[in-house]
Image (cartoon, rainbow over all chains, first blue to last red; front, side):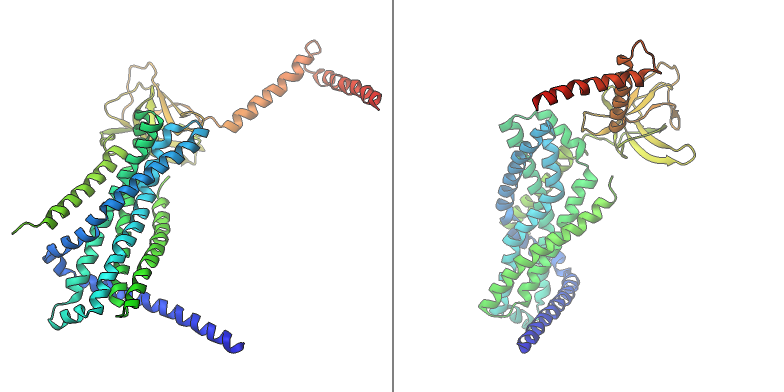
Length: 265
Length: 188
């Protein structure tokens, strides 16, 4: 009995220390990526190729989900605003929630599960098949050739995807509120424009998605690079990428939002 | 440099992303509607600004003519000192009235300007002297209740005058009670 408790505590402590260890090595990994990203800009073709794989191929899911999220927001918002006779404010509701929160966060979650997992699996498999060691043998730094381009591709794609998501969401809200329900077109746009501030709302959303892009790609590339070189190890690393980047996105969102809202009002 | 389809996709993706940002800035946000027009600043003191915020609109005849630039508390007069940044295209007479208004019951708070008839115009640094504070709903309701309460006995004791008002009201209040008592007794 006593032995069992002791063993449980030991495992807990081991896990805790292991987690901190991972954070430390991830930070070192991050600086290493930054240090060896000269090649990525020197040979920008490498980054472009990765932008194609992680950004362009995520377009469908981002656009379609943005449209649906906007439509749902329009429907739900209309239902609630109707009680207060303020249905014209539906544009404000849809635009502000998309630009400030849902655009960056949901796009980042989708990006993490669509592109982040793919990056982890790819790098993990490269490690399993010893492609990374082979590169090292040939004096080609895998950091510069494989990791850094993927990192920068994610950092470039994420804000663009979030902007697309928000724009499609506003369009979806427009379709539901104005075209289907019949809210006044002019009031929809003018109230939205009166309430959405470019600097406070739009730019802050872009900053958020930029930070999320960094977080997701660092986690994804690190998990792949760090994965145990077995089939099981790669599959676990892929799962961990999705879980820990989702948690990181939401935690970072809270921090960033509280920082950004401070100066307002 | 040879072209590849990746280039095309990259270009399309980046263009689409920036187009979306542009839409967010111009169509959704206020960047398109609000050119950085030249403004001039005038001040106004209010006893109570209610829920007025910095960047709240300044309207005259319902048209946006400026924004609230700054709000400070004047510690000498115990009043709110509001700086308004007005669009250079519009000028107002010196005796313009500034009032803190609310659009609708739940709408935003804004400053309304009602032009006066003075020949001279407001220039930068001037002060709007005639101001009207925000209407505090609670105060309005309590005033209404108070005036109603004052009205009530005065109507009942019309010939008696103010001094007798209280006494006149008392029997009136007692009468229904007396009337109710027998009814209650009869029921028993």
